[in-house]
Image (cartoon, rainbow, N blue to C red; front, side, top):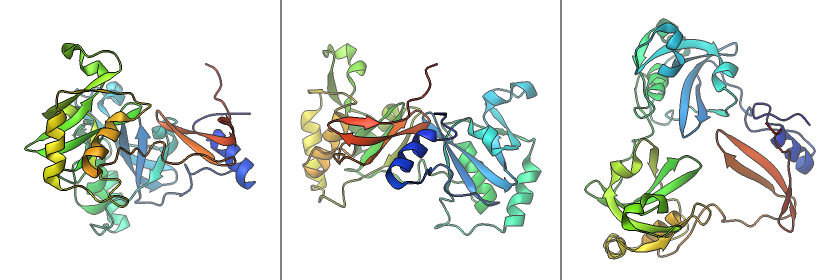
Length: 304
Protein backbone atom coordinates (compact mmCIF):
# COMPACT_ATOMS: atom_id res chain seq x y z
CA UNK A 1 0.00 0.00 0.00
CA UNK A 2 1.15 3.55 -0.59
CA UNK A 3 2.57 5.09 2.56
CA UNK A 4 3.73 8.60 3.44
CA UNK A 5 3.55 10.85 6.52
CA UNK A 6 1.74 13.49 4.48
CA UNK A 7 -0.99 11.16 3.27
CA UNK A 8 -1.21 9.54 6.74
CA UNK A 9 -1.99 6.20 5.08
CA UNK A 10 -0.94 4.17 8.14
CA UNK A 11 -3.66 5.99 10.13
CA UNK A 12 -6.15 5.52 7.29
CA UNK A 13 -5.44 1.78 7.33
CA UNK A 14 -6.19 1.24 11.03
CA UNK A 15 -9.22 3.57 11.13
CA UNK A 16 -10.62 1.67 8.14
CA UNK A 17 -10.09 -1.61 9.97
CA UNK A 18 -11.71 -0.38 13.19
CA UNK A 19 -14.50 1.84 11.88
CA UNK A 20 -14.86 0.91 8.22
CA UNK A 21 -13.88 4.49 7.40
CA UNK A 22 -10.42 5.70 6.39
CA UNK A 23 -9.93 8.89 8.34
CA UNK A 24 -7.03 10.94 9.70
CA UNK A 25 -6.88 13.62 12.39
CA UNK A 26 -4.15 15.48 10.52
CA UNK A 27 -6.54 17.34 8.24
CA UNK A 28 -9.64 16.98 10.39
CA UNK A 29 -10.19 20.73 10.51
CA UNK A 30 -9.97 22.84 7.39
CA UNK A 31 -8.29 26.15 8.20
CA UNK A 32 -10.14 29.39 7.59
CA UNK A 33 -8.51 32.72 6.69
CA UNK A 34 -7.06 34.22 9.87
CA UNK A 35 -6.54 30.86 11.60
CA UNK A 36 -3.23 30.08 13.27
CA UNK A 37 -1.53 26.90 12.09
CA UNK A 38 0.78 24.99 14.46
CA UNK A 39 3.19 22.74 12.55
CA UNK A 40 4.90 20.01 14.60
CA UNK A 41 8.58 19.76 13.74
CA UNK A 42 11.48 17.97 15.41
CA UNK A 43 11.67 19.31 18.97
CA UNK A 44 9.55 22.42 18.38
CA UNK A 45 6.50 23.94 16.68
CA UNK A 46 6.54 26.31 13.74
CA UNK A 47 3.63 28.71 13.33
CA UNK A 48 1.89 30.23 10.31
CA UNK A 49 -1.21 32.30 9.54
CA UNK A 50 -3.64 30.85 7.03
CA UNK A 51 -4.67 33.47 4.45
CA UNK A 52 -6.84 31.35 2.14
CA UNK A 53 -6.61 29.43 -1.14
CA UNK A 54 -4.08 27.03 0.40
CA UNK A 55 -1.59 29.75 1.33
CA UNK A 56 -0.06 30.80 4.65
CA UNK A 57 2.10 33.70 5.72
CA UNK A 58 4.85 32.86 8.18
CA UNK A 59 8.26 33.86 9.47
CA UNK A 60 10.59 31.48 7.65
CA UNK A 61 13.63 30.42 9.74
CA UNK A 62 17.05 31.91 8.80
CA UNK A 63 18.26 28.63 7.31
CA UNK A 64 15.53 28.78 4.70
CA UNK A 65 16.62 32.18 3.40
CA UNK A 66 20.16 31.71 2.12
CA UNK A 67 19.02 32.54 -1.39
CA UNK A 68 17.95 35.97 -0.16
CA UNK A 69 21.31 36.69 1.43
CA UNK A 70 19.67 37.11 4.81
CA UNK A 71 22.08 37.61 7.74
CA UNK A 72 22.31 34.85 10.35
CA UNK A 73 19.53 35.16 12.93
CA UNK A 74 17.14 36.97 10.58
CA UNK A 75 14.13 35.27 9.08
CA UNK A 76 12.02 36.50 6.18
CA UNK A 77 8.24 36.75 6.17
CA UNK A 78 6.98 34.58 3.31
CA UNK A 79 3.67 33.79 1.62
CA UNK A 80 3.78 30.12 0.64
CA UNK A 81 1.55 27.13 0.07
CA UNK A 82 0.72 25.37 3.32
CA UNK A 83 1.70 21.96 1.90
CA UNK A 84 5.15 23.37 1.06
CA UNK A 85 5.65 24.78 4.56
CA UNK A 86 4.51 21.50 6.16
CA UNK A 87 7.49 19.55 4.77
CA UNK A 88 5.67 16.27 5.53
CA UNK A 89 5.02 17.32 9.14
CA UNK A 90 1.59 17.27 10.78
CA UNK A 91 -0.32 20.39 11.71
CA UNK A 92 -3.40 21.57 13.53
CA UNK A 93 -5.51 24.72 13.55
CA UNK A 94 -4.65 26.22 16.95
CA UNK A 95 -6.10 29.62 17.79
CA UNK A 96 -4.70 29.03 21.25
CA UNK A 97 -5.15 32.48 22.74
CA UNK A 98 -8.77 33.11 21.69
CA UNK A 99 -9.81 32.58 25.31
CA UNK A 100 -7.54 35.45 26.41
CA UNK A 101 -7.74 37.96 23.56
CA UNK A 102 -10.37 38.97 21.04
CA UNK A 103 -9.09 38.31 17.51
CA UNK A 104 -8.75 41.35 15.28
CA UNK A 105 -11.15 41.66 12.32
CA UNK A 106 -10.14 39.17 9.62
CA UNK A 107 -9.61 41.87 6.97
CA UNK A 108 -7.19 43.70 9.30
CA UNK A 109 -5.35 40.46 10.09
CA UNK A 110 -4.90 39.58 6.42
CA UNK A 111 -3.94 43.11 5.39
CA UNK A 112 -1.31 43.34 8.14
CA UNK A 113 0.07 39.94 7.13
CA UNK A 114 0.34 40.85 3.43
CA UNK A 115 2.12 44.09 4.35
CA UNK A 116 4.79 42.09 6.20
CA UNK A 117 5.65 39.74 3.31
CA UNK A 118 9.30 40.13 2.31
CA UNK A 119 10.37 41.86 5.50
CA UNK A 120 13.16 40.54 7.70
CA UNK A 121 12.66 39.81 11.37
CA UNK A 122 14.86 38.27 14.04
CA UNK A 123 14.04 34.60 14.41
CA UNK A 124 15.18 31.76 16.64
CA UNK A 125 13.61 28.59 17.94
CA UNK A 126 14.40 29.61 21.51
CA UNK A 127 12.68 33.00 21.30
CA UNK A 128 9.65 31.48 19.56
CA UNK A 129 9.47 34.38 17.13
CA UNK A 130 7.38 32.52 14.55
CA UNK A 131 4.68 32.16 17.21
CA UNK A 132 5.05 35.76 18.37
CA UNK A 133 4.72 36.91 14.76
CA UNK A 134 1.38 35.19 14.06
CA UNK A 135 -0.05 36.03 17.49
CA UNK A 136 0.68 39.68 16.84
CA UNK A 137 -1.16 39.43 13.51
CA UNK A 138 -4.24 37.68 14.94
CA UNK A 139 -4.55 39.32 18.34
CA UNK A 140 -2.39 42.43 18.24
CA UNK A 141 -0.50 40.78 21.10
CA UNK A 142 2.93 39.19 20.71
CA UNK A 143 2.82 36.26 23.12
CA UNK A 144 4.13 32.73 23.30
CA UNK A 145 2.80 29.75 25.24
CA UNK A 146 6.30 28.56 26.06
CA UNK A 147 6.86 30.68 29.14
CA UNK A 148 3.28 31.73 29.82
CA UNK A 149 3.28 30.17 33.29
CA UNK A 150 6.03 30.73 35.84
CA UNK A 151 6.67 27.61 37.90
CA UNK A 152 6.02 27.57 41.63
CA UNK A 153 7.85 25.38 44.16
CA UNK A 154 6.46 21.86 43.91
CA UNK A 155 5.41 22.17 40.26
CA UNK A 156 6.31 19.43 37.78
CA UNK A 157 8.15 20.62 34.67
CA UNK A 158 7.87 18.70 31.40
CA UNK A 159 10.82 19.45 29.09
CA UNK A 160 10.43 18.46 25.44
CA UNK A 161 13.56 16.81 24.06
CA UNK A 162 14.23 14.71 20.98
CA UNK A 163 12.23 11.47 21.14
CA UNK A 164 11.00 11.98 24.72
CA UNK A 165 10.03 14.27 27.57
CA UNK A 166 12.31 14.92 30.52
CA UNK A 167 10.76 15.76 33.89
CA UNK A 168 11.90 17.87 36.83
CA UNK A 169 10.50 19.25 40.09
CA UNK A 170 10.77 23.00 40.54
CA UNK A 171 12.09 23.83 44.02
CA UNK A 172 12.30 27.62 43.83
CA UNK A 173 14.94 30.32 43.27
CA UNK A 174 15.44 29.14 39.69
CA UNK A 175 16.39 25.56 40.64
CA UNK A 176 14.94 22.13 39.87
CA UNK A 177 15.60 18.63 41.18
CA UNK A 178 15.58 15.90 38.55
CA UNK A 179 16.93 12.48 37.65
CA UNK A 180 19.71 13.35 35.21
CA UNK A 181 20.09 10.77 32.40
CA UNK A 182 22.98 8.33 32.68
CA UNK A 183 24.82 9.99 29.78
CA UNK A 184 25.07 13.21 31.77
CA UNK A 185 26.85 11.56 34.67
CA UNK A 186 30.22 10.48 33.35
CA UNK A 187 31.94 12.85 35.75
CA UNK A 188 30.23 11.10 38.65
CA UNK A 189 31.37 7.66 37.54
CA UNK A 190 27.79 6.43 37.34
CA UNK A 191 27.46 3.01 35.68
CA UNK A 192 25.60 2.83 32.37
CA UNK A 193 21.85 2.80 33.00
CA UNK A 194 22.11 4.68 36.30
CA UNK A 195 21.13 8.32 36.56
CA UNK A 196 21.99 10.71 39.38
CA UNK A 197 19.51 12.96 41.16
CA UNK A 198 20.71 16.53 40.73
CA UNK A 199 19.74 20.00 41.92
CA UNK A 200 20.51 22.33 39.03
CA UNK A 201 19.52 25.66 37.59
CA UNK A 202 16.22 25.39 35.77
CA UNK A 203 17.51 27.14 32.63
CA UNK A 204 20.56 24.85 32.48
CA UNK A 205 18.34 21.76 32.49
CA UNK A 206 15.90 23.20 29.93
CA UNK A 207 18.71 24.33 27.62
CA UNK A 208 17.26 25.18 24.20
CA UNK A 209 14.24 22.93 24.62
CA UNK A 210 10.66 23.95 25.33
CA UNK A 211 8.96 23.26 28.62
CA UNK A 212 5.66 23.66 30.38
CA UNK A 213 4.39 23.44 33.94
CA UNK A 214 2.51 20.15 33.87
CA UNK A 215 1.03 18.86 37.11
CA UNK A 216 -0.67 16.24 34.99
CA UNK A 217 -1.96 13.93 37.72
CA UNK A 218 -3.54 16.54 40.01
CA UNK A 219 -6.98 15.37 38.86
CA UNK A 220 -6.20 11.85 40.13
CA UNK A 221 -4.05 12.37 43.22
CA UNK A 222 -3.81 14.99 45.93
CA UNK A 223 -0.35 16.63 45.93
CA UNK A 224 1.70 16.22 49.08
CA UNK A 225 2.39 19.32 51.19
CA UNK A 226 5.02 21.51 49.50
CA UNK A 227 7.46 21.24 52.40
CA UNK A 228 7.33 17.44 52.23
CA UNK A 229 7.97 17.44 48.48
CA UNK A 230 10.97 19.73 48.77
CA UNK A 231 12.36 17.89 51.80
CA UNK A 232 12.06 14.51 50.05
CA UNK A 233 13.72 15.92 46.94
CA UNK A 234 16.61 17.42 48.90
CA UNK A 235 17.22 14.10 50.69
CA UNK A 236 17.83 12.17 47.47
CA UNK A 237 20.11 14.69 45.71
CA UNK A 238 23.30 12.89 44.73
CA UNK A 239 21.80 9.41 44.84
CA UNK A 240 21.93 7.04 41.88
CA UNK A 241 18.77 5.56 40.39
CA UNK A 242 18.07 3.36 37.40
CA UNK A 243 17.09 5.50 34.42
CA UNK A 244 15.87 4.77 30.91
CA UNK A 245 13.52 6.39 28.42
CA UNK A 246 11.52 3.17 28.21
CA UNK A 247 10.86 2.93 31.93
CA UNK A 248 10.17 6.68 32.16
CA UNK A 249 12.00 6.81 35.49
CA UNK A 250 12.55 10.57 35.39
CA UNK A 251 8.75 10.99 35.32
CA UNK A 252 8.22 8.34 37.99
CA UNK A 253 10.79 10.14 40.17
CA UNK A 254 9.04 13.52 40.16
CA UNK A 255 5.50 12.13 40.39
CA UNK A 256 6.55 10.20 43.48
CA UNK A 257 7.91 13.43 44.99
CA UNK A 258 4.72 15.38 44.22
CA UNK A 259 2.04 12.73 44.80
CA UNK A 260 3.76 9.97 46.74
CA UNK A 261 3.06 7.70 43.74
CA UNK A 262 5.46 6.80 40.91
CA UNK A 263 3.27 7.14 37.84
CA UNK A 264 3.78 7.65 34.11
CA UNK A 265 1.34 8.60 31.38
CA UNK A 266 3.15 6.53 28.75
CA UNK A 267 1.89 3.09 29.75
CA UNK A 268 -1.19 4.11 31.72
CA UNK A 269 -3.57 1.95 29.65
CA UNK A 270 -3.07 -1.64 28.54
CA UNK A 271 -4.27 -2.11 24.94
CA UNK A 272 -7.10 -4.49 24.15
CA UNK A 273 -7.60 -6.30 20.82
CA UNK A 274 -9.12 -3.82 18.37
CA UNK A 275 -7.60 -0.75 20.05
CA UNK A 276 -5.82 1.86 17.94
CA UNK A 277 -2.26 2.61 19.04
CA UNK A 278 -0.75 6.04 18.32
CA UNK A 279 3.08 5.95 18.38
CA UNK A 280 4.76 9.35 18.54
CA UNK A 281 7.73 9.59 16.18
CA UNK A 282 9.87 12.49 15.00
CA UNK A 283 7.56 14.95 13.31
CA UNK A 284 4.65 12.53 12.95
CA UNK A 285 2.54 9.82 14.54
CA UNK A 286 2.59 6.19 13.40
CA UNK A 287 -0.55 4.11 13.88
CA UNK A 288 -1.20 0.44 14.51
CA UNK A 289 -4.10 -1.85 15.38
CA UNK A 290 -3.59 -4.02 18.46
CA UNK A 291 -4.62 -7.64 17.78
CA UNK A 292 -3.65 -9.25 21.07
CA UNK A 293 -0.79 -11.32 22.53
CA UNK A 294 1.55 -8.34 22.18
CA UNK A 295 1.06 -8.03 18.42
CA UNK A 296 -0.11 -5.19 16.19
CA UNK A 297 -0.98 -4.85 12.52
CA UNK A 298 0.26 -1.70 10.82
CA UNK A 299 1.33 -0.21 7.52
CA UNK A 300 5.14 -0.25 7.71
CA UNK A 301 6.91 2.68 5.96
CA UNK A 302 8.89 1.86 2.82
CA UNK A 303 12.51 0.83 3.39
CA UNK A 304 14.81 3.66 2.32
